[in-house]
Length: 233
Image (cartoon, rainbow, N blue to C red; front, side, top):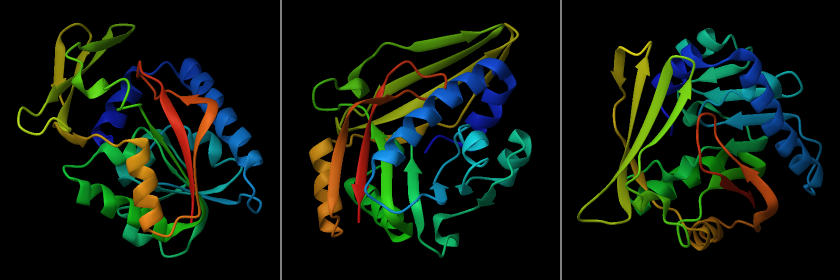
Protein backbone atom coordinates (compact mmCIF):
# COMPACT_ATOMS: atom_id res chain seq x y z
CA UNK A 1 0.00 0.00 0.00
CA UNK A 2 1.06 3.61 -0.37
CA UNK A 3 3.09 4.39 2.74
CA UNK A 4 2.07 6.65 5.59
CA UNK A 5 5.21 8.70 4.92
CA UNK A 6 3.93 9.43 1.42
CA UNK A 7 0.70 10.92 2.74
CA UNK A 8 2.51 12.96 5.38
CA UNK A 9 4.73 14.45 2.65
CA UNK A 10 1.81 14.99 0.28
CA UNK A 11 0.08 17.11 2.90
CA UNK A 12 3.05 19.49 2.83
CA UNK A 13 2.66 20.18 -0.88
CA UNK A 14 -1.11 19.94 -1.28
CA UNK A 15 -3.09 23.03 -2.19
CA UNK A 16 -6.08 22.66 0.14
CA UNK A 17 -8.72 24.01 -2.24
CA UNK A 18 -7.57 21.85 -5.11
CA UNK A 19 -7.20 18.82 -2.86
CA UNK A 20 -10.79 19.09 -1.63
CA UNK A 21 -12.03 19.55 -5.19
CA UNK A 22 -10.21 16.40 -6.27
CA UNK A 23 -11.46 14.49 -3.24
CA UNK A 24 -15.05 15.54 -3.91
CA UNK A 25 -14.81 14.38 -7.52
CA UNK A 26 -13.62 10.96 -6.35
CA UNK A 27 -16.29 10.71 -3.65
CA UNK A 28 -18.97 11.57 -6.22
CA UNK A 29 -17.80 8.59 -8.31
CA UNK A 30 -17.95 6.18 -5.38
CA UNK A 31 -21.30 7.42 -4.11
CA UNK A 32 -22.70 6.90 -7.59
CA UNK A 33 -21.33 3.37 -7.41
CA UNK A 34 -22.77 2.83 -3.92
CA UNK A 35 -26.22 3.78 -5.23
CA UNK A 36 -25.94 1.29 -8.07
CA UNK A 37 -25.02 -1.65 -5.86
CA UNK A 38 -27.77 -4.08 -4.99
CA UNK A 39 -26.86 -4.14 -1.33
CA UNK A 40 -28.24 -2.73 1.86
CA UNK A 41 -27.89 0.95 2.68
CA UNK A 42 -24.21 1.83 3.17
CA UNK A 43 -23.39 2.91 6.70
CA UNK A 44 -19.88 1.60 7.45
CA UNK A 45 -16.71 1.83 5.35
CA UNK A 46 -13.15 0.58 5.81
CA UNK A 47 -10.12 1.93 3.96
CA UNK A 48 -7.24 -0.58 4.37
CA UNK A 49 -4.85 2.25 3.57
CA UNK A 50 -5.14 6.01 3.95
CA UNK A 51 -6.62 8.18 1.23
CA UNK A 52 -7.63 11.86 1.60
CA UNK A 53 -11.19 11.10 0.47
CA UNK A 54 -11.75 9.89 4.03
CA UNK A 55 -12.07 13.55 5.05
CA UNK A 56 -15.32 13.73 3.06
CA UNK A 57 -16.59 10.18 3.53
CA UNK A 58 -16.45 10.46 7.31
CA UNK A 59 -19.02 13.26 7.18
CA UNK A 60 -21.66 10.76 6.06
CA UNK A 61 -20.42 7.29 7.05
CA UNK A 62 -18.81 5.56 10.01
CA UNK A 63 -15.27 5.01 8.72
CA UNK A 64 -12.23 3.06 9.83
CA UNK A 65 -8.78 3.49 8.30
CA UNK A 66 -5.76 1.21 8.56
CA UNK A 67 -2.98 3.77 9.02
CA UNK A 68 -0.84 5.34 11.71
CA UNK A 69 -2.13 7.77 14.31
CA UNK A 70 0.36 10.31 13.00
CA UNK A 71 -1.52 10.38 9.69
CA UNK A 72 -4.85 10.73 11.53
CA UNK A 73 -3.64 13.73 13.52
CA UNK A 74 -1.77 15.32 10.65
CA UNK A 75 -4.82 15.21 8.37
CA UNK A 76 -7.17 15.97 11.29
CA UNK A 77 -9.45 13.05 10.48
CA UNK A 78 -12.29 12.11 12.82
CA UNK A 79 -12.41 8.48 11.66
CA UNK A 80 -11.16 5.53 13.68
CA UNK A 81 -7.57 4.59 12.80
CA UNK A 82 -6.19 1.10 13.52
CA UNK A 83 -2.75 -0.42 13.04
CA UNK A 84 -3.84 -3.58 11.21
CA UNK A 85 -6.77 -5.09 9.34
CA UNK A 86 -6.69 -7.77 12.06
CA UNK A 87 -7.86 -5.07 14.51
CA UNK A 88 -11.19 -4.85 12.65
CA UNK A 89 -13.49 -7.48 14.13
CA UNK A 90 -16.90 -6.58 12.66
CA UNK A 91 -17.82 -6.83 8.95
CA UNK A 92 -18.52 -3.52 7.23
CA UNK A 93 -20.76 -2.58 4.31
CA UNK A 94 -18.00 -1.37 1.99
CA UNK A 95 -14.24 -1.92 1.86
CA UNK A 96 -12.45 0.65 -0.33
CA UNK A 97 -9.01 -0.73 -1.26
CA UNK A 98 -7.86 2.07 -3.54
CA UNK A 99 -4.62 3.10 -5.26
CA UNK A 100 -3.93 -0.42 -6.58
CA UNK A 101 -3.82 -1.78 -3.05
CA UNK A 102 -3.42 -5.40 -4.17
CA UNK A 103 -0.32 -4.68 -6.26
CA UNK A 104 1.70 -3.86 -3.14
CA UNK A 105 3.02 -7.40 -2.76
CA UNK A 106 6.05 -9.54 -3.57
CA UNK A 107 4.30 -12.76 -4.60
CA UNK A 108 0.97 -14.21 -5.67
CA UNK A 109 0.56 -15.68 -2.20
CA UNK A 110 0.97 -12.21 -0.69
CA UNK A 111 -1.84 -11.01 -2.95
CA UNK A 112 -4.07 -13.96 -2.08
CA UNK A 113 -3.46 -13.36 1.63
CA UNK A 114 -4.22 -9.64 1.31
CA UNK A 115 -7.47 -10.35 -0.53
CA UNK A 116 -8.48 -12.96 2.06
CA UNK A 117 -8.00 -10.42 4.85
CA UNK A 118 -10.17 -7.91 3.00
CA UNK A 119 -12.81 -10.57 2.40
CA UNK A 120 -12.94 -11.35 6.13
CA UNK A 121 -14.05 -7.81 6.98
CA UNK A 122 -16.33 -7.37 3.98
CA UNK A 123 -19.95 -7.72 4.95
CA UNK A 124 -21.13 -6.60 1.54
CA UNK A 125 -18.84 -5.25 -1.17
CA UNK A 126 -15.14 -4.79 -1.80
CA UNK A 127 -14.20 -1.99 -4.19
CA UNK A 128 -10.65 -1.83 -5.48
CA UNK A 129 -8.72 -0.25 -8.35
CA UNK A 130 -6.22 -1.60 -10.87
CA UNK A 131 -4.50 -0.48 -14.03
CA UNK A 132 -4.78 -2.70 -17.09
CA UNK A 133 -1.61 -4.77 -16.79
CA UNK A 134 -2.51 -7.00 -19.71
CA UNK A 135 -2.90 -4.36 -22.39
CA UNK A 136 -1.02 -1.35 -21.01
CA UNK A 137 1.77 -2.93 -18.89
CA UNK A 138 2.39 0.30 -16.92
CA UNK A 139 4.97 -1.41 -14.71
CA UNK A 140 7.27 -1.87 -17.73
CA UNK A 141 7.52 1.81 -18.52
CA UNK A 142 10.93 3.33 -17.94
CA UNK A 143 9.65 6.90 -18.03
CA UNK A 144 9.75 8.86 -14.79
CA UNK A 145 6.56 10.77 -13.99
CA UNK A 146 6.89 14.08 -12.17
CA UNK A 147 4.19 16.38 -10.85
CA UNK A 148 4.91 19.92 -9.79
CA UNK A 149 2.99 21.87 -7.15
CA UNK A 150 4.29 25.38 -6.46
CA UNK A 151 7.93 24.83 -5.45
CA UNK A 152 7.56 21.09 -4.87
CA UNK A 153 8.09 18.15 -7.18
CA UNK A 154 7.01 14.53 -6.71
CA UNK A 155 8.89 11.98 -8.82
CA UNK A 156 7.71 8.38 -9.09
CA UNK A 157 9.97 5.81 -10.74
CA UNK A 158 9.18 2.16 -11.42
CA UNK A 159 12.13 -0.24 -11.71
CA UNK A 160 11.31 -3.66 -13.16
CA UNK A 161 12.73 -6.80 -11.54
CA UNK A 162 15.26 -8.27 -13.99
CA UNK A 163 14.49 -11.85 -12.99
CA UNK A 164 10.72 -11.85 -12.45
CA UNK A 165 9.10 -9.49 -14.93
CA UNK A 166 5.86 -9.43 -12.95
CA UNK A 167 7.59 -7.71 -10.03
CA UNK A 168 8.94 -4.21 -9.72
CA UNK A 169 9.81 -1.56 -7.17
CA UNK A 170 8.27 1.88 -6.91
CA UNK A 171 10.63 4.65 -5.82
CA UNK A 172 9.23 8.04 -4.80
CA UNK A 173 11.27 11.22 -4.42
CA UNK A 174 10.18 14.60 -3.08
CA UNK A 175 11.97 17.83 -3.98
CA UNK A 176 10.79 20.73 -1.83
CA UNK A 177 11.64 24.41 -2.19
CA UNK A 178 14.02 23.49 -5.01
CA UNK A 179 16.63 22.24 -2.54
CA UNK A 180 15.29 19.75 0.04
CA UNK A 181 15.38 16.16 -1.22
CA UNK A 182 13.56 13.24 0.43
CA UNK A 183 13.65 9.61 -0.69
CA UNK A 184 10.93 7.27 0.57
CA UNK A 185 11.59 3.59 1.14
CA UNK A 186 11.08 1.55 -2.02
CA UNK A 187 7.77 -0.34 -2.27
CA UNK A 188 7.69 -3.90 -3.60
CA UNK A 189 4.99 -4.30 -6.24
CA UNK A 190 3.51 -7.12 -8.31
CA UNK A 191 1.15 -7.13 -11.26
CA UNK A 192 -2.50 -8.00 -10.73
CA UNK A 193 -4.60 -8.87 -13.77
CA UNK A 194 -8.40 -8.63 -13.90
CA UNK A 195 -8.83 -12.36 -14.56
CA UNK A 196 -6.32 -13.13 -11.83
CA UNK A 197 -8.28 -11.09 -9.30
CA UNK A 198 -11.53 -12.73 -10.45
CA UNK A 199 -9.96 -16.17 -9.88
CA UNK A 200 -8.72 -15.26 -6.40
CA UNK A 201 -12.16 -13.91 -5.56
CA UNK A 202 -13.85 -17.08 -6.80
CA UNK A 203 -11.47 -19.19 -4.71
CA UNK A 204 -12.73 -17.25 -1.68
CA UNK A 205 -16.34 -18.03 -2.61
CA UNK A 206 -16.94 -14.60 -4.09
CA UNK A 207 -20.39 -14.17 -5.60
CA UNK A 208 -19.74 -11.25 -7.95
CA UNK A 209 -16.94 -9.57 -9.90
CA UNK A 210 -17.39 -6.49 -12.10
CA UNK A 211 -14.99 -4.14 -13.84
CA UNK A 212 -17.10 -0.99 -13.81
CA UNK A 213 -17.76 0.53 -17.22
CA UNK A 214 -17.25 4.26 -17.69
CA UNK A 215 -15.94 4.71 -14.15
CA UNK A 216 -12.25 5.45 -13.69
CA UNK A 217 -10.22 6.52 -10.68
CA UNK A 218 -7.02 8.54 -10.54
CA UNK A 219 -5.06 8.82 -7.32
CA UNK A 220 -3.84 12.07 -5.82
CA UNK A 221 -0.68 13.30 -7.54
CA UNK A 222 -0.87 10.42 -10.01
CA UNK A 223 -0.96 10.57 -13.80
CA UNK A 224 -2.49 7.22 -14.69
CA UNK A 225 -6.15 6.27 -14.40
CA UNK A 226 -7.18 3.03 -12.71
CA UNK A 227 -10.19 0.81 -13.37
CA UNK A 228 -12.71 0.46 -10.55
CA UNK A 229 -13.60 -3.15 -9.70
CA UNK A 230 -16.35 -4.37 -7.38
CA UNK A 231 -16.32 -7.77 -5.70
CA UNK A 232 -19.07 -9.25 -3.56
CA UNK A 233 -18.74 -12.09 -1.07
